Length: 422
Image 1 (cartoon, rainbow, N blue to C red):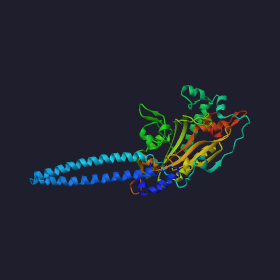
Image 2: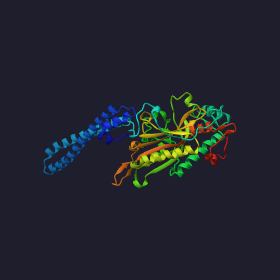
Image 3: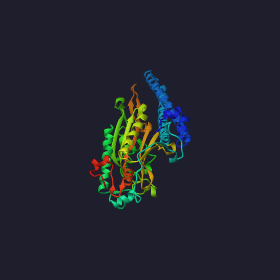
Image 4: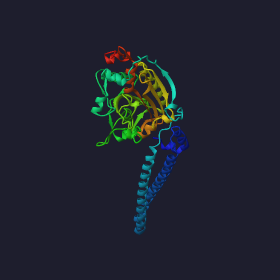
């Protein structure tokens, strides 16, 4: 959530930067400033009346001591009227603040200065590419056919048990899932991220804190009876650990990692782009999260990008890194790098990770702060990244490594799999 301080000091800058996301913020910004001015005026008037009431109270006491009961009675009535007015002003403030916040949460995060405008994914900036394109047989199969051939993943059984987008992993397919999870966690903890095992259900405050609510509420599974939400990513519970918390500067950076199942409704998704593992309602992911000093957040972002790049390199997958343009940037992100791996049998790039800096957008909602050198609380910067999301990694591993002798697994996974070939 953008801070009122920024909106008051430079509304033109906010409107200009949000235009990079193709978001017309003008009407909302002007409405917020109007509501804020009215709220502050009501606060000023209420404060003045409260101060006046203290003076009146001392006058009443003095008049009573002097035996001037009638005069004291008149002033008492004035004081009572003043108290009622203060109550009205406080009620007005509450209404204005609620209305202000309802509009404030609709404003996306400001894109960082390096983010370019654009109309969509075609305008994302290619940062670099790596890895070697695989040579696969002429009769190579897409991963959903390989999964059926080798009895690795049963998509039809998932439909029977739950519905489309909930696959059942079997045998070596299940082993591959668990191997990747443990491999990613091991690499993350070696890089200094502390492993956490969080709940996969969160409350409304947690969804609001990281920006999924209200913006992405329709994409989340809601447990109505208890008003909980199934998490779309471990980012939500991990970052919310520090909601309403003030850290010491020496505790930064906080670096966390977690494996969780993730749940996304993906309403309206259909067609070839969602076949097999390309888009699921339930999937496994290992996440990395950082809370940093604002001065260090972009160097932390670069480090996280290099870390995820190394994971993809260890899996020997061809990849590319894209810096997202404004139109493709998420509601909460200030800057994002997407990782894509090449899926040889499908002959297309598949997104497997987003690594983002949210600056203070989440921490302002969370009230996640640290004490600076002057002892005053300041908002931390929050970052997160997939390290990594499993479905499309599995799809690329199966497709890119198929041979007449079977599907060869990368060396980095052998000790986790206890086999080298499917």
